[in-house]
Length: 145
Image (cartoon, rainbow, N blue to C red; front, side, top):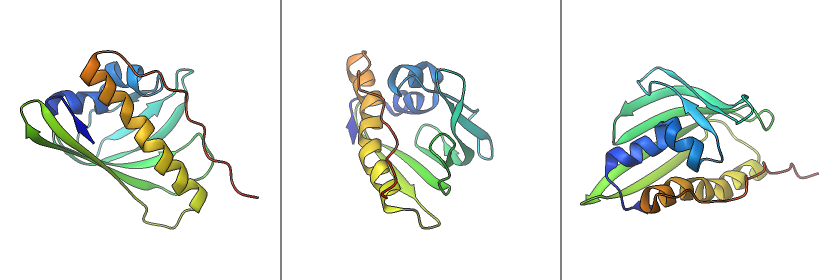
């Protein structure tokens, strides 16, 4: 995904609760974003929805974290990598990679395939227009019966 913003602004959109509360379905994240630090993503009603540890951090270009979803039932931990690459004046390429060290159900993978584009549209729109994108809150995929 390409975003018309400086790397520092994209980093802030991914790591600052000031941004995430506006562009990530009212969720706020908490961490100091240093390697080894814990991080968590909180819902508006005060529940931790996702938690993990920062595995690598090179502000404003790279962030790697473990990702453990608490709110949708037991899912194996995955690793989420965010790469912010400057490609021009106030233009970056943001690449998010989700890696699964253990197998997970196909319906859970499909949830990620649908969810990441929606999730990343929020910071993109907010950074480029100054206004949050009003999308419905995604629901976790249901297990096939």
